[in-house]
Image (cartoon, rainbow, N blue to C red; front, side, top):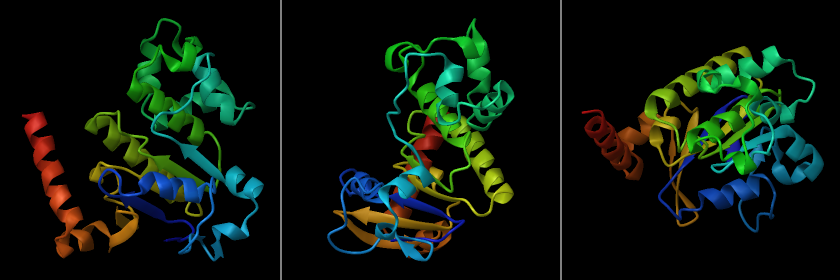
Length: 227
């Protein structure tokens, strides 16, 4: 698997396909036994763990929030950030309006492990935290699974705008929802730990394999939900 510098890679596949294992390999929680993971011109194994992990902003499906205020949780990645910078990151993550609805706004305590917030709000606070730094690689590990499609669209639009502003930054997006990766520069489809399809959204639809079949199913499902 190769991630070109400044590009976005989407990783999809059915449950149990190996997506979580790939994330663990990217973070080097364990080392590859076969194959190669490459970022730009270098294998991930060429980087020290310290340098690699400091370069990656990882947002998990179930992000960890501390029992502190919303603002403090967002600013965890950049303690020197101003309130304006925290609010801007929250706007990019489409959670700013939600935060303002709380009586204490950004000073609202999130409770133990973020119990005050919904699952989607926790994910978006974690995304805001990641966007508050300028790390060269953003890794979203099914981090939009709990947000609705309208909010998803807003976040993806903001991420697309950031790519234009910072063309040197890379992103890896792991998702069960194909709409999240549709605009990626390259998409790989996993099954049983192996790559069975790869290409752009358009080429994968034309290939008419698992990706195309799942895309049609998810689009039909979304239209029925909207009805």
